[in-house]
Image 1: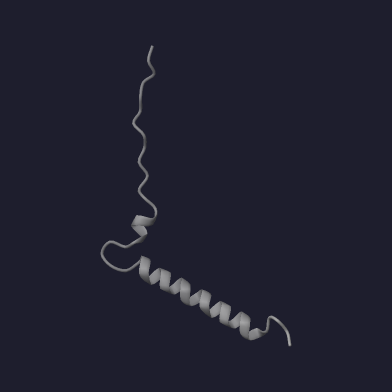
Image 2: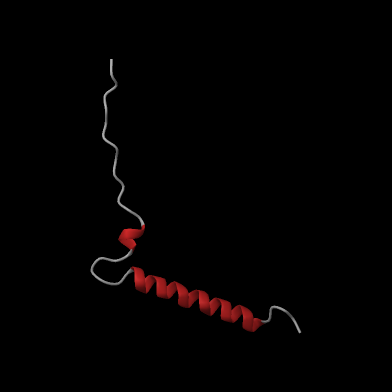
Length: 52
């Protein structure tokens, strides 16, 4: 009786694939996908001249 049999690895791989597909489906669906809210747009700081 081994601790990690082939069924364990197969179930783990299937769960990983199904979870990844679910994330892709949720983040890529709709007009405004959730992925745009995960990483905000980069905004540069305003340039300032040093005081003399």
